[in-house]
Image (cartoon, rainbow, N blue to C red; front, side):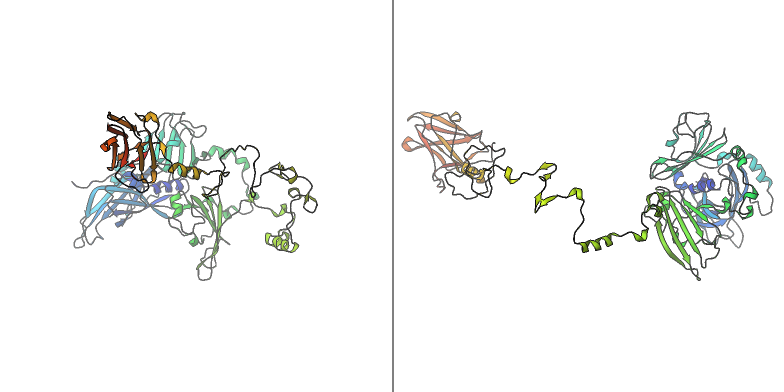
Length: 613
């Protein structure tokens, strides 16, 4: 399928330039180029974000006419200067603001697929592109009209000016606001039409309800946003800005109307009242404010224009691209450069740079200069200009600044006087050697003096004999680790724990179904339990005796050496199930073991997995 042309898409920087040029300067379309970057798959937002393109050929377009907010252009790109075939993916239009002469990529017209520009053959032109298109401009912006080489417009030009559908022009977001729309929510680059709706939220005071809102933004509040609202009933244009650092919208600012100016004519300036003739007064067009290109080094901006110059950057991203910034987190700013004597030469030029940060309102100043060779020297780097309300004025000082002692001077004299003067209200007053006039206090609590102490007050560094019962709010700690204690010494928790670990315990009779005694000892470090079952049952009686240990142990397992001996030395059985020991046989019995454990000779033992608390 052959490639076809898409819609002409305006770039973001084009809209910025048109807003700057409105009512101040004209715009000239400087060149049309064949784009060699593959933009066929780019979205509208990607095309709007382009700032430049790679291209193979360039031609100057002609602006045929400007009507309302559309400008009609014509351009022919032939292969007269093409020596070998190449592929192009669209055409880009460049334009400049006449007052600044700064050229930007204005719009792009993509193809749906790549197309080939064939090389010329034997100096004969065999291929060309002719584009006749409309491109949007802000209403009221002047466009320099460039006619064809013959100096006239063709009949086809005139016919197309009448019949060409404006619908074939710009692919730019254009919609009608719904009733009651909150203007604070419109953040992306767009033109929004408002029709007879006075309920729109956050509109300027007195808005008629009918007009157009132009938004310059990226769809969110991470970058600055500009709103321009044209009230088409009251003929008022208002502008406001969103500060992405403080997250606050500014107030709407209305442009002055002619009637407002006329009402102020009684305050006009008369020629006789002017200190300088009108021809010698600097006008607004002489102090132009232009966008500072990305990546500009501030220390290269020597002013040779013979007048002050103003630059600005509207976004944080652009500001961060600058070189030799006054602060690392520079936001949108206005920069003014002015040279001493309004110099027009690079030699012996002394230029002041003054920058104001939009996000903080802080101002910074630097001074750069050149010698006879024109080489730039940073005479004074960026420094913050102090806020007058936060500095000490000489008129407010009791002593001149050169008569005020510095800290180092006070310290030097302090060493010589041998003591540090104290605040009299914060020191203790003595009536004699170390004798306080009043009882000292700590946090308004009087100190306890020796005469107030009880005579039998215990002293921790001496032996104490208590003649009365003592009550402690917490258990006293004994640090004596000796094992040989007298009869009257208190046992420590460690003593009691050691005794508990080495003690034999008797199983409660409620857990034994006989009249015998069952004792056991736990060796928890080895998960062992030794036990002994006293003589039980009557001679010649077949019975099963149990000892229930399930409330003490988990995972009880008998040693294979454990046995139960009944009278007459008849060996019978002993088993463990569910942590319950069962002894069964005829006659009285006692437990024993074939294993001599040394520590507990011939005692039955078992292992366990854990104790039950």
